[in-house]
Amino acid sequence: VNDGYIEHRDILESYKRIVNPNHVYERISTAELYTLDHPGGLVKTGRSNCLLSNEKAKSLGLSLPALDDQRLDSIMLRYKESVWARF
Image 1 (cartoon, rainbow, N blue to C red):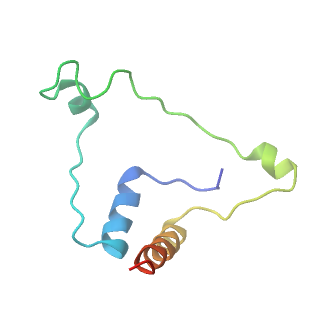
Image 2 (image 1 turned 120 degrees about the vertical axis):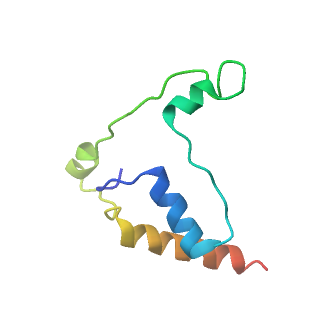
């Protein structure tokens, strides 16, 4: 687990800004997951907010780069390069 915090929205915004400016997505509220025009909503179970820890890995001398906006942009640039290198 990397140090840092990121939301799904941040990943989508970075993807659109760096990889594909034409990508379209629509954010919906948590309430909409359960009430949209689908029998039983779009999800079957409630949301799980898990808190992950990297303390055990650190105690073993393992570490990953911190996850922040710069790191996310770097990942998206590498992804874009790897995807477009195939074409």
